[in-house]
Image (tube, rainbow, N blue to C red; front, side, top):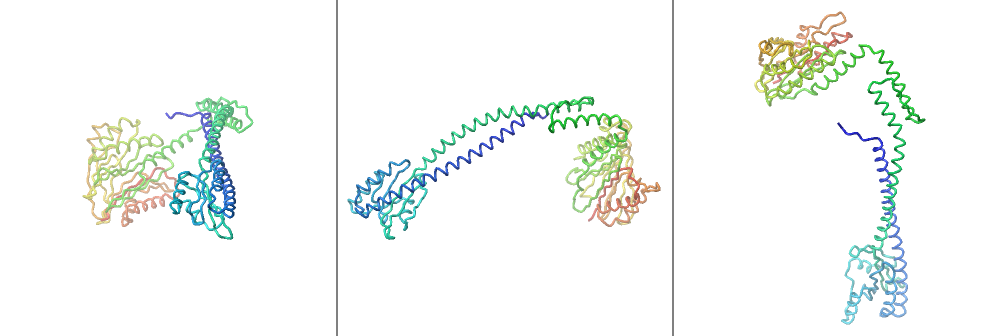
Length: 509
């Protein structure tokens, strides 16, 4: 039995999940906002620093020239003191380095000066800055150093005389964001804990009247129609409790007025549903054969059943059965019969043997006074023949295309579940039919031949044979449909008193 989860726990889980989703969404939103704001602030600060640096360098270049390394070095050291700033550099207009905040790079610059050779930047990102030809700021992300590089060309009369640049560490942003996120996570955990507590309290208040309502409904469901649900509430739960009480009162009154007709209608509907569920969803599709089938239920259920069973790759079982009686008992017996047939038919090429097993098992389970008439044939797909046995059911009809007449194949047999296994096995016999091109096998239930018109006249087996002869030129399903149409036309407005079932197999090639 599936374990039940209380409404209180379900409500609690849903609300805690909702709170968690909301807080997580807010956390992610604030994190992104914080990160974007810090990034923008750092870039603005870097832009302000680079503009200041560019202005001072421009003044030194114009007054002292590019060789005043003392003044330039002082500027670099001053800017380097700013938080998050590293790798400050000053370039000539051709991209050669004049000064760099990194001592190792500065040493290389000094050595190149001694050797009277130029020292150039070789990193990809700084080289982009060296190629700029206007005073606009260039902000690039340097993945090698996890930093934002901000650079600016120094222009005099639209002529570039130098370039300044610096790197702003992205670690400072990540560190600040991580700290803020940690604080938010802590606050979120506190809120979730508080949410769980208040959720428990709130849900307890909400669920209490629902629990009382459920307990009352359970008592009523066990048959105590005198019980009244006591829920004092002005909301929908109180209204539902009043509805339950009124329903209980009405149910008690209705129970006293139940009639046999209502009980029978419920049984019949259940039986009809059982029948529909157990019938094949479609007819087989086998080369050189066409198949047809039809089931039309009556207002009262008689327990008709037809089936197609795959016996082995070259043999197909054809079943037509009719359970005596009506209602749920008939439907149950039909279900038992079907289960036994489908269990023992595969692999067994003797219809008589299969019926022997079905009779033996059915005899032990069938209600007293009930029985099942049945036909079971095994179609040999390769040899175009039908081996069959009949247990008290209608005779098999074979329409011969050569003579254009119906041939009635008779065989002995008594109904399933009616007699002892010993007597049953002595009576039942097998027969075989060979099929030629165009021949048709037809089996049906009593609902076809015993259909009545408004004068009380039966449709009859003779009329069935006439219509088979008349419509034998079409495929099996078409023939079945035409027979059904003729039965409907015969009965007209007369209510159908029994189920109608028909199966047909035609050798097309």
